[in-house]
Length: 111
Image (cartoon, rainbow, N blue to C red; front, side, top):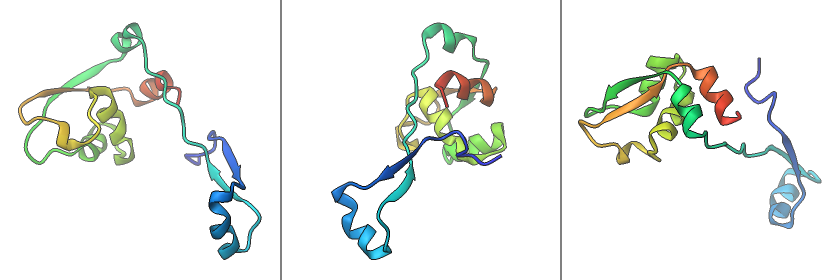
């Protein structure tokens, strides 16, 4: 199943992209809309099963995503759940929580 099959497409004919359209010889550019994530309620977060991980030197969100989900592309789920925009915000020795059921987390987020 393609990963973008449920993503809304946008036909962009704004003036901002006029030079790009001219270079490509097209009238409009089709791209995928940015998904809107829904912040789950406290109750929804409480229902998600998680495991703990103590952040250590060398940890990366993509490595943890591969370890727990088998797919490094979902690094952002772990980062989002813990409120860290990047690994630089994670502190060595701090405990982070990793949602274990990826499908459930994505459903709660509205993805």
